[in-house]
Image (cartoon, rainbow over all chains, first blue to last red; front, top):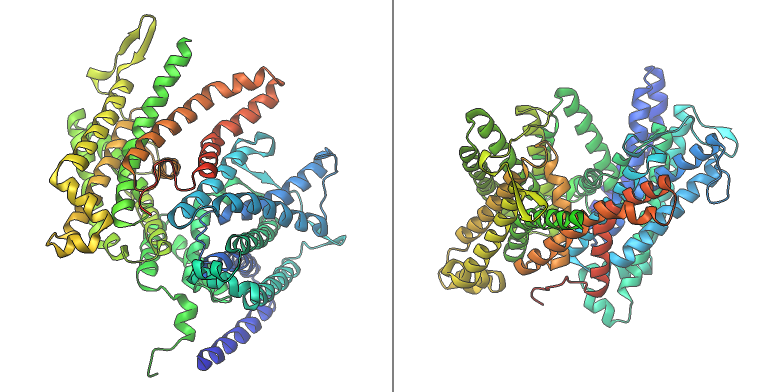
Length: 326
Length: 304
């Protein structure tokens, strides 16, 4: 195990250096596309880390994580839209300030996660999977039906949010903001999973009855984890809305939830850093295959099947846990 | 009044179609413990098989046979190649693998047939109207769809409750190892059940073909509705699937038909339209949430 820890420390250090240096290197080659692509990676990575908290650590297979991602994005876009239209929403003016809009995005996603989580967590196993999926689908259809906010066509943001009044239009600056937030999320989720709270969550995954017998209200712990994961996904959505300056119901389509799940498993369940690696691999494979053919899903689908069948530990597990005797 | 009866019939017809899908999905889950997201793909394959062959030959009967054969064949094939390896695995990997299958089949159909929706004609014999009650004409085809749903429900009940295969299926669901120890080839039984589910999904796709357009992604929309159905009914229960399908078929159809009018009685037109649009598309999820609050394991819970 110690060897594995050493390897993961080295991997994390290398990845950190690479991610910090990336925009500088890209700038010398004059490529802004690489920075945008890497920003996507950071945002997807953040959402994947949050999903790993509930799937990997909590053992709660949520198939509706895209809903919280989308709600976060829409919160930011709607606030900007209301500001631009000059129409107050719920009695307040819209805003373009990240320091207001991003926490609000987390709040909205967190509240949705609280309601849906409280209902879904009454069930378990296959029921839980299907119900989280159904609730996400419900949110999806609500936004499809909201013609005022563009319905199917989505909603564009005229400009990126300001951060404390300062503009963050520069792709490099925005990249570093996302990187900093991702680091903060990983740090917090890491602390969370190693705390007593995280131990109860992991314990409940392994043996729910035992944790209950020890006097823990398993449902409450799970709900808190579910809400935290939803809030992080909401922040991811807020960042995504700023990156793309566009939100649409596609952000919360069920295929998006599936993609987040692929990232988590591809990276490695319950491995904290793994999902970021998974997100990177996902984006790499997706962009490579989609350049190859318009019907890239024909190739990507079997890849996903193979991952599910033969790579249960994911890339992170494969990299850090060596085969016996090695 | 006339509209109400018509909409109730539409609800029953949607319920019948949903049952065809839900029956297979719930059997596969109840017996093999597998969550099969690719069930919607089998629905799509059935519809495409029928639409293409019926379009080329002009014969509806040949189309039906082709659609059924295609769905069942693909079903058996994915059971042998993929699903079989998932029986002992965690739900997470089942979801992931069958998600991959969906991507594959959607991409494949788009590549081979194209993304443009196919149209499928109603068979000539069933293209007219029947006057059920004086002054209420109703499309014969939709009545036929209802009949198919009912016939399958009865047939399934008979098979599961009265035949030897049904006995094995029931036994295999609860005492897998014991049935296997008694010399029954469980693997073959599972392939059969999965193939049967695929066949029913294909049948659903075929009968829906002339009502909606046949296109890539048609399976997923209906798949999620089917999930709602079996969650409400109790996963693994065919009876629950039937009740759930009828409930959801009704709720969805009546909600879409009458909510706008009901809301307009209480608020302004534009607001009512917007709200009714949103509300009627989420109505089935609200029904599901209500059922789960009262009965977390569905209306007809299976097992312990």
